[in-house]
Amino acid sequence: MHRSIIAVNNIPMTIRELLSENRIEIGAALYSKEEALDELIRLQKKSGMIHNPGALKREIIQREKAGNSAAGCRIAIPDVAHSGSAKTAISVITIKDGVDYGAPDKRKVKLIFMIV
Image 1 (cartoon, rainbow, N blue to C red):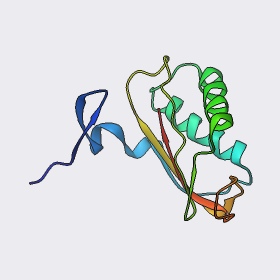
Image 2: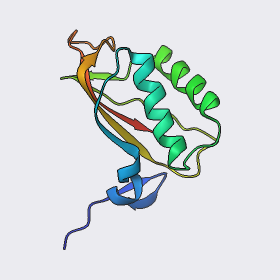
Image 3: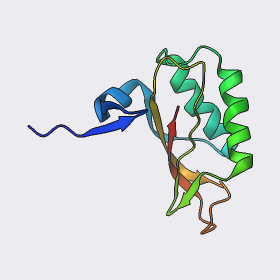
């Protein structure tokens, strides 16, 4: 069986190590970029990957000010090197009606991957 391996900080990791079911939410009823970021942070905290959600939110907001993480095609990928995270982890949400994320193509974002 083929294992997908990527390197994070030069450490080989599988997708399974980065992403688990308890950091995924499908069809979230969210109405703003801020609500979406809060939900992604909540998933990181719920899974034990972070201990200070307020600090992570401040870092993500600072990252978004430096450059919007919306990629277009209804996708955003906010990322930050958070000193308070247990290890690199991904949280994912899909948003039923999408949210205005300031995407370059002006379309509402419906899929967000947060990499911490």
